[in-house]
Length: 336
Image (cartoon, rainbow, N blue to C red; front, side, top):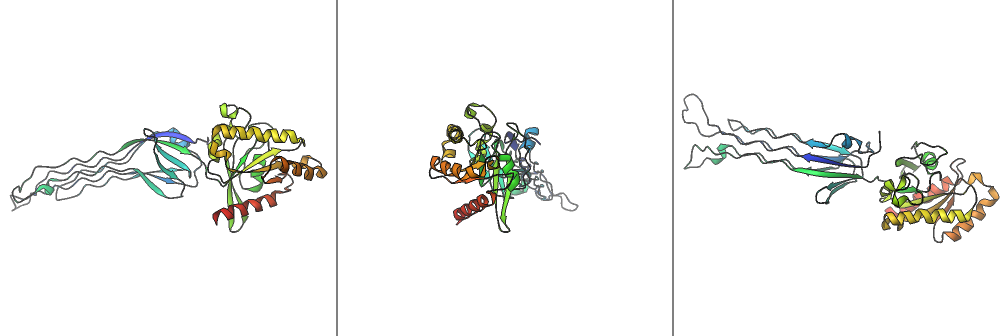
């Protein structure tokens, strides 16, 4: 299934049923009074976040949704049946936005929490409602109210605690495949990752966090070069950004340049992203001599002043356990 993170749909709640015009007609009761019942209310349009969904693909295939109309009232004071609600399931993190006013209606971040966007029209009144001491045979009824019609823009921003940043082939997909159950496509060429990948990282029986990997960024991404800029919004909810930099060549000047280039694209996209806590992950250390690793780390710490710097290899597993422990403790501190 294709990863779709935006869609525009039209929703219509159900119309209310009309009230009924009826008079009691029974044997030996020639002048029975009014007994027309009220119409039923129209169905609502509800949204609910389903954790098994990860894309808005279904809403690209179908663009219009309507709840059931209420039924008309009946004689013998019988109330018309209410219309059945229509409930639309979306991935967690989907924002519901009024397309015409740009108003955020709801941010669907809570699993299984139902939110009503369009309420059904009320049913009309039957003539029994209008009987008075002076009008014992009213012929008046009211029609049901129309339902609401709203254009909704759906925007998905994935829910993750940690986001992975880096240029293509920095090792992000390999890392997420090693520390979580996510199985992204991995290959030795740029732009293997074509959509965000989410993985749940288990630290122990009681502690875990969610990590997101987006397509790699390259210079000019904020102007449409490459793929990653399309998915940067998915990092807006994360608490920590892990900036992966490939150090297999051991070139510190290139390391600093890669870091500055990516951060330039973050700033061009959204000032809020550049303010997020960012750690530097020197990846693929299995490809450089062991005696050089500490020296590169020490020099990197001087370059990236006041930032956490870690050396890891997703192939050998070196440094991963420590990295995950530090992330877990940092997230735990934020919760407390």
